[in-house]
Image 1 (cartoon, rainbow, N blue to C red):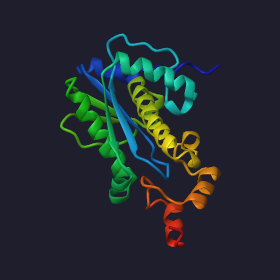
Image 2 (image 1 turned 60 degrees about the vertical axis):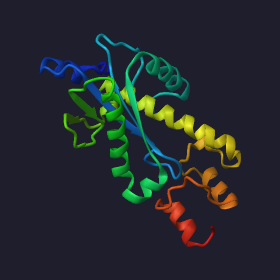
Image 3 (image 1 turned 120 degrees about the vertical axis):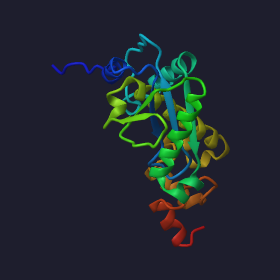
Image 4 (image 1 turned 45 degrees about the vertical axis):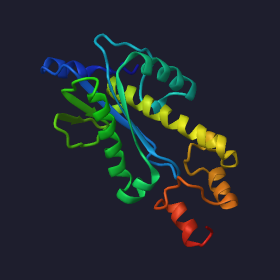
Length: 209
């Protein structure tokens, strides 16, 4: 039987090293053709527990929503959003990093962070940063950030869906599904698409918009 992973292992070690306020950051939305990339940064209170919380990708939408409601009402957090236009200008990797910096800065206005754990993302900050490979599945602080980032972005896409239901954003959240690509071919592009992304770039090059 596989042993349970201690999702507070890194946080406990950092506390032993003398760090008090430990942030965790993660992003959502690198892969979609449409919309912003959204990052969150969290700082968990002492003795924090939330059974079942893990990397947002491993959770059902229903569970993500449940954890999201609990987290935003019980822990300090910051959110960073970088739009599609900026993603096209600086690339998604740098846009993800920028979104994280914004989220960290917003949280730092509430909590004097000593260090930030990231999901394998190196970030240049005035405080210590510890990138952890697959950190969203190994650190509860990063996992909390991943849930807040994911659900925040999903909620943004639900609003877009209300304005443009023919595209089906509530289902695919901007990712390049077959139904999404068919909708683009049928209805064209609306503001918010990432024009440097393969399928959208090809669509424009073929003179379809």
